[in-house]
Length: 423
Image (cartoon, rainbow, N blue to C red; front, side, top):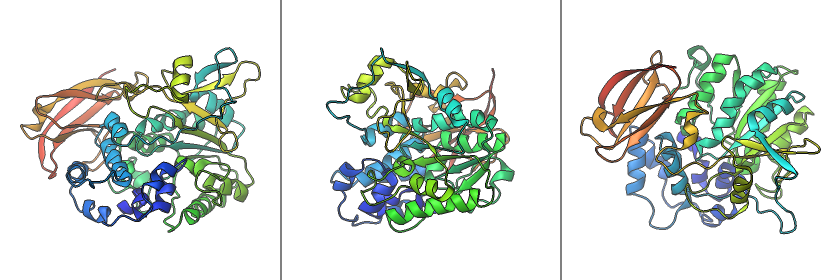
């Protein structure tokens, strides 16, 4: 899939709203005119994501270009620099509750695991939709954790916005490679979603649309999902992982006249989707004070994993925007280190120290861990990019055997070794 699909925001304001989704007005206001340079054309031929990252940093537009910053943050993610991604693109799409509407308090609401609560509510639904912030890979953890739970409830289809239609060998291979979809799919946690979904037995569905307008893209996505899933299997149960406002059940966040994909798919199928938002209550700048709604909720409920709020009397799940989403998820703070706390996935992934020794004196360099049985172009199980000499950091890996490889911006392999991660 061309990089164009990964970063539709570069095409101008309308496409930017499509990519960023909910509450994109602050960004759109900064990009009323199409960019004068074709940044995609400049980045596309470079040998790898580290080269693209270096090029973009060196050629960042002089003005505060939010489009370029979004691209830079996505590249940070793909390089394993997750907290840096948030700092490079502190996009805040969070809902500000009306002054007379109080935030949930602990006397009336309790926090529960989002995975358990959503899985329980999904049993009576045929469609579950979860959104992500494209530059914040923390918003992929929930989908990954839900895969086995929903499979046990009969869900057999997983639709992924970043997945392209051209990788016909994906299911047989069992893992994504560099060309399986948009550049978002090269981020390790996104790759793990694909890997584990195929291992469980899901059928993966590519559904994104390259329509030139936001309205056309929403319609195209809905039609593609209907055609690829429900027209072929009327009894299908479907999990959809999408960006921002595509999962909205009512207009507004993409413009007052644009019907979001979820709304249109509900009409095509006659099914009421369970819609989950996790882009509004998350860390925006790691370590920075937050006296807004997110900061208040974190202080009250102290989430250590993704949580939902449950009414103590009715067991109803809380939504900050009930016209558009059934459930609001609150993500924990990311922490202040170079690698966020959530990467351990609740302790299931084990920390392993790596350092610049593998780079053999060439920094910056990417240190990538791939499963021993996968090819060299597989999306890594984890990756960290060293930007300075004589430093160390941590990879987070499931128990198993891995091949480590250090690569520079030119694509040269600087060093390799094997790694056995025990239980």
